[in-house]
Length: 276
Length: 249
Image (tube, rainbow over all chains, first blue to last red):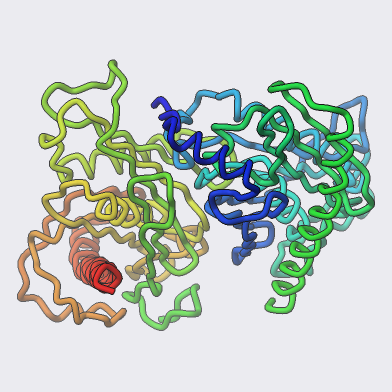
């Protein structure tokens, strides 16, 4: 189903409000929407709500044979098919441009930045390694799917516990979760994505755009950083050209936001750990 | 006889169910239905624009999409889609909206057995939330016959299904009986036999079982479905009352 364009009135109102320093949902320019993180009963099941955007991430694992050229490397894969539940724009079994961008973003932020220690997933070199799979389900779309998906994915990976294994010679025993305490994955750093929507030729930038802001924006800039202020991924995919100083300014704002979000994730994980 | 699911004492006990409607903002209607540790989220869009190739001249097209919790949709999910679609087709008064699409998306959130039943209950609640015209309300439960004790267990968990010799999923509509909204008891009373004969709307059985066993399953499930009907009724009326109060204020 085709999407309805915002009306001229909506567009003008939003832009005029931005010029006067206000966003239509009452946030400041560099504010994220309220972030809610809730965990399922199983390890690795996380539901993230960023305002009205809602995402469910589920981590699962299995033992498989590694590639011959990388005998000690485990696998990490992401499934980011956007279901029509999020919005009718998405059709089942057909990829949209937005979906490709989101999945590339996650891939770059998590896998290419080596957030997860894949060597630690090896059980017997060349024979058996763990394959970790993250299924990201988009339930409701109110803009900024990439940031919400990124938070959901990393939180789910941090929450996940894989079954313990013991190796005696060639014999591998996988202990069910009920019998032996499962082990957490080893995570090197926590990449968090921060997306900026650009308006008025880059004069105005807002963090965490809503769906309406995404429809009206002239371009976007997505930065993925960790708490150590290291940039893991930077994406400026088209739209209007942006001055270099703005990119530096954005990265400074993003660093502060990443700090805040990481603290929220860690607090949520600690609260959940207490409950178990 | 003790169950594998130690939280329940009786074979005919359902897990505590809960639901919430209108969770999603982009969909026209949505609902989440939980049977204990099983949870399904369902969204409904419609009546909406339909693809030319799916267009029906005299009625609305019903599309069901089932998405598994882990992995890509497979044969099992396609079978689920078909079961849900064919159960709901006679329930939705589709002739009122010809040449349109009613799209139902089903997403498993937590899986601990009886997923098809949970999905069907979530779907009907989402349809109610979306305001799609229906001619009755359906309720669904799953039951199994245990391979060791030959006992019929209602609303089984994954662990219990693994030990079943046969699995049965039933759907009943609320036409054959009018449930009382006060039936809050989780325990199904089989002795009470005066409210109509069971007429299954959908029945899917796998495994080996005898005719008597099947008929007993039908009877037990019918009683259990009335508890589900009662629950859906109360949930919807509570929601409407709340909305009414909000508009008054």
